[in-house]
Image (cartoon, rainbow, N blue to C red; front, side, top):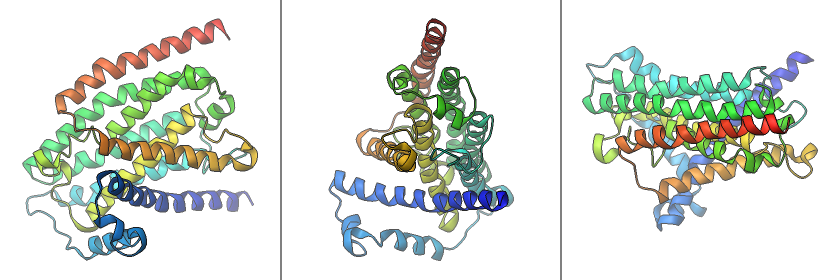
Length: 319
């Protein structure tokens, strides 16, 4: 019975992994169309352009799989999988509902998810190096610099929550969560969510891609299904970062009637944060590479350290 229970949970995580990123991608098309007054995505393929996602999938599948002649073929082909699979592993450890609503309980879950998140970013670095393209290599170097800059505030902000909860387990953090954590950990939430967006190279932190500057950065030489896997990894990353932010800082499944509707509160909070990521793409211009680095080291890192100090003071004064 225990085997079938675990298998059912993992199957549910796999279904969510295959559907939620697609829903986020489709939502992005529609939200951007409304915000920018774009006609095409609203009417292509029937009611509200619902078939556009299917048409895009068929288009990617029909494209020829081309590998540059001078590329490192093995790493070039492996990079999309390295970019995508880690988000599936992270999703397994994220609690969705009380009473065991998680694919796999990990005692040091926060360590696991943050370590695996860093691996996912390496997929673009691999693609940029293996493509034998100067623009791709430049995008890969920007990816590496951005990862190094934003990994530190991401870890520091997460450390503040683990200090507050007194545990490294994600379900344990949710068990210890109280409503007054919202103002208490607000700065940490801002740092964590912002650093997560930067690691995904989402606007305004998309200098590693920057189509107007370096074509499409590490993804310049990719096409067809391999390019589609990179796009799926980006949307899966949005889901994972939003879900982690909801778990660590917004109470996850906590809400009215959480015993019965905990999963619904978790999905609503994750969806709201995913919408915020989409809105930022429309509302904010791209930052320069030097501005991105300066923002990480002079703004996010000091804020994360300040949040840790505040957490420590509160824990000592109000044990």
